Image (cartoon, rainbow, N blue to C red):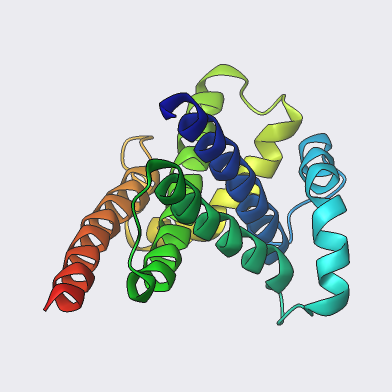
Length: 185
């Protein structure tokens, strides 16, 4: 059962991350002619296209992709509970899935920033993914850079975004504990 749990959860989390990446690429108006962007669109389009005919976008947010990611996270809660023979309280399931959706978005942003930092040392702008990573991370890093400019050639904006993400992750734990305690009493 553990192996099956692991495989199912991993596949659901990977596809959720890809869907959230697609949403983020649309929000920041990333270059969709980039080979990596094309890959993301091609692996999500077969499922997102039919949903879009039923669920329209709200402004720049691809509502169909966000809703599908939410459903996948719900499945990531329901399936392991079912396989292990336990039950997850229904009153907690939907808020928990929403918090996990925000957490998945935060993890995606974390990895985008880390990969951009590593590639900045290695490829120095010669890779097609460099420009895409710039487009995906710059909307978060530029406002910080205006407040705290680079000092001595070191850019601290990536580290500050990551620290904010860590702080939000601790807040997530507190909210989940509060939800659990409110449900039990």
